[in-house]
Length: 299
Image 1 (cartoon, rainbow, N blue to C red):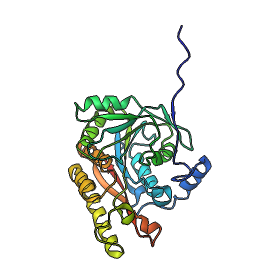
Image 2 (image 1 turned 30 degrees about the vertical axis):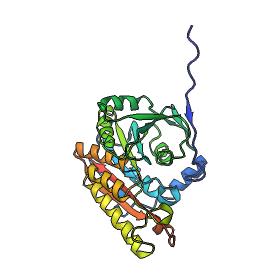
Image 3 (image 1 turned 30 degrees about the horizontal axis):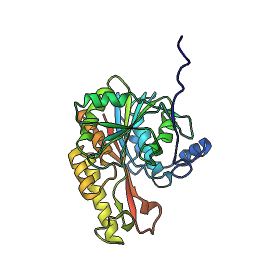
């Protein structure tokens, strides 16, 4: 006689109340407070014939710094899939070193201040098998302290409440390109949104990276570094994105963004910058700063 069905496993939220609000009402209030922000390139003006796949690059700092940009970018990309939005959202995080195994998550659900996000843990092995040995996932079942996926999930739950979520983290090397190719195959037949989560240059002594020194010279260096990465992302050049991330510290999760850009290139997408700014624009006067960009790849 079969036993009772297994209880779904739940990954707990570890950053709620610090990186983003801890309560559902606070999440909704903060998102509503961003309604007047459209991004300098007018996210709401992005349009196209509804397709089956849309892609975007979003920042993953605490919501105080970059939540509004992540929200506008997600909203603009999701609108390209038509009024029903995606059935699947693939959130690609990072914070891994080159040569690392990519990370997948084994739980069925991921806690958010809204309802839990329903995960797709069995999709990662399918992607790995499709990569023909070019990609390996490490299944991570304990706390990570990593923000690259978690800070996006309340936004995904808010804008796409019916979507199931593939949550993985990409290494910043050639395996990211294998991830993009495998993910395209795995998402075939699904209405899907791919969300690549990365911040740009982390500049300042606190980050151990200040080649131009402090002050205005350092800010100028960071902005040039950021712009080079953004230009590579807009050109959908994943190899250059990986080089800029690894050699010039121009992105903290370049593998995620490179995988997304490779997918966009394979689909013949067009790219559009939603907005770009830095933590210094939000909170001036600090001795370090981080760049944030939102990019949509439109069919």
